[in-house]
Amino acid sequence: MGSTKKVLLVFLPSESGVDGAKSLYKENEGNAIFSWFNRSLRTVIKQSQFAIPPLSLMILSSIQVDGIEQTLCDMRFDEFPFDSQWDLVGISVQTGMARKALDLAATLRSRGITVALGGAHVTLFPDACRDHADVLVQGEAEDLWKEVLSDLKTGNLKPLYRSETFPDLSLTRPVSKSMLVKKRYFTTNLIQTGRGCPHNCDFCNVHVLNGHNLRKRNIPDVVSEVDRFRREDRRIFFFVDDSINADPEYAIELFRRLIPLNIRWFGQATTTLGQQHELLETFARSGCCALLVGIESIEPKSRSAHRKNQNRATELAGAIKNIRNAGISLYGSFIYGLDGDTLDTPSAILDFIDDTKLDVPGINILRPIPGTRVFDRLREEGRLLFDPLDITAYRYTFGQELLYSPKNIPLDDFIESYSELTRKIFSVTNAIARGMAAPSAKTAVMLFNLFYTHLYGLSRKDLQFQKSRDPQEKSILPYAE
Ligand code: SF4
Image (cartoon, rainbow, N blue to C red; front, top):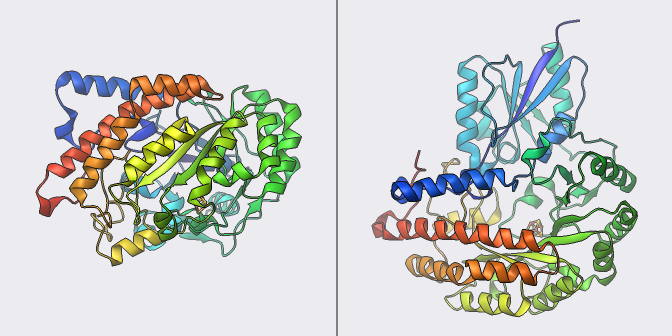
């Protein structure tokens, strides 16, 4: 028997948003006091437990292979542990953080450390990642990672691990939280009941990465995981499924069985839930206190241009009111700048928020993620403002830059109207009012609105910077280092 092999799983922070507010440009850091304020706020955001643990790495670190010891490094909190010896480092690569991940891989490999890259970006663009790693893991990784660890043990690592089929989620695979430092996170109670999405929204990569078929875990496995997790951490649960109401029969049975466990939970759903009365009632009885719903657009033309077909625009307001009336607070996510939007869209969004009393409005700019249909279309139409061949140019920001030219609105007008919209929606007064009016989770609703008041301020500043540049040079700039 050889000695134990040591494996480190790494999760990287994004450049902005919930991992800390940061301007994209040095020029916008402002004077010493403003920059000190932003740095302090970044620390507060990090320490106020908005962060949730990386579920994919929790799943991988729960895989047991004799002779292998796995450790998790969340670089939102920890520096890379260069002082230890690692037989293999696995890095989860998200498209928005690809540059950072590839840079880290290069540093590690230059020190002779074997690097495995996996995650969404590797799954979508294996060719672009091949030269940056010793091992690529392409696709949903639970079965593949076990093979990687077994091969590491025997000294037979292969350059590529890839499966033609999605993992069977109905197999029992208990997830362990033992590697998490509990106090760092908003909650450690993350549960996934299934993967895949039957819908086709063209700006989304969920159906591209996880397929159109809903693959569900066995209900008894989920119930026992919830029961075990709540003994380890009494805080709220987060059901991370992209659409927890996608299979209503499954969801009714699962959440009925969770009622006796007396948990409080939040998750993500489609607005169709407002018409699924039995399910809505079951959610409320099982402790659901807040849901994120993707409204995306209230413009029928935009909904059909981007294949957002789950609910008609005319039904949205009624659906949202039904969900709030059931005692569940709502985070409603909009995208402004879709192909059917005009300069009249912002006032329609404002009226909609006013009418529905949405608790936390999220006002996003369309982000053409490489690997999605909308990315390909915008590239073909010559509307991308970044080099589509530079896969590291796309990055996560908090509404801080426009990555494409809107169809019906000149870029400068779009920036003005978007800034005006977020200025009207987010203020300290509105944050307090929304918190007080929320049907549940009042403090969280108020904090989110306050947090967004700051972040959208940053977004306006950075967008103005993009607007002020020479018309020929409105394309995006590299990050301030
Ligand atoms: S946006 Fe939501 S509903 Fe649309 S494809 Fe993505 S996960 Fe499915």
